[in-house]
Image (tube, rainbow, N blue to C red):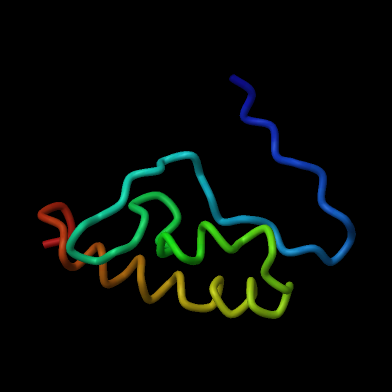
Length: 73
């Protein structure tokens, strides 16, 4: 399986997917990209503005997930 990223047009917002696709039941976020199932499913049809809005939420989600995990304690 190739880890090649798909071609993006200039200015297009890339997916935050890193290929670790496992949903966390307590947060409702993917453990790899920290998106919700709804965000993942809608990504290909979202506007670039909506994608950027999701990207802006990811650092806080990563931090919250790190504080919830035993490794983040």
